[in-house]
Length: 118
Image (cartoon, rainbow, N blue to C red; front, side, top):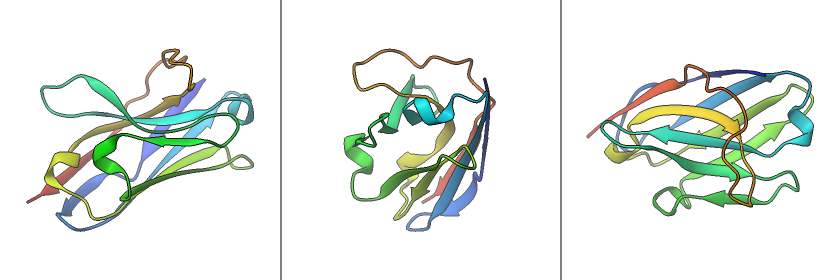
């Protein structure tokens, strides 16, 4: 499986970005997907997840501002980020997501850098 995240960039606080992640490997539709963020000096953490049933979960600080979605035909997962804050800054990665707490299943891709200026 290969993961290719894109859509990052520099945005002012209050602005919006939409991230995309293309997943190759013909297993996309069977897996839950998540977006993970590694902020400067911090561990990588789950920001948003959608399990295989479509149930969504969000890290507390992004609830109401971020939205995860997916296109099973195109095999792409999206993260719409609105009302962005400086603390949203980091490298964003996609990977598998399971609500039972299993770790992400695939090798990490390069991620996409998001910088929010305050």
